[in-house]
Figure (cartoon, rainbow, N blue to C red):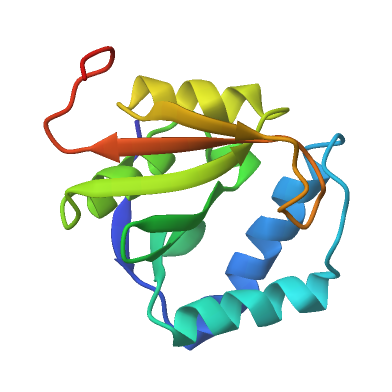
Length: 153
């Protein structure tokens, strides 16, 4: 594990967040590119302006982010070179500290993400054919509730 600092994103972080989105998309060959790099930076800026984004920094560099509106996580991304070092977990724990319930969608093809969420107490609640998302890919709904354990209702 590495020393990770979590804080609210600033407008100047939009470029770094856009870069994380772009690099992450490139690392998933099954995921079609539906937005340009410029659109990803604009999207990051919009989420920051809305107050949704928390960033993870290592040695002062943004290496991951979580975008959340109320209980809905809209994005959780970590630079490929910073994965498996506790960054994503730190971002989730930061969100769990202020929410009693969290929900998110993940692509079915992203088995690594599904495993990550399940290991952190998220339960699968729904699957779709993907007709409701930008990529048109089947997806899975995950939910976490404070105090609720895996396998218990």
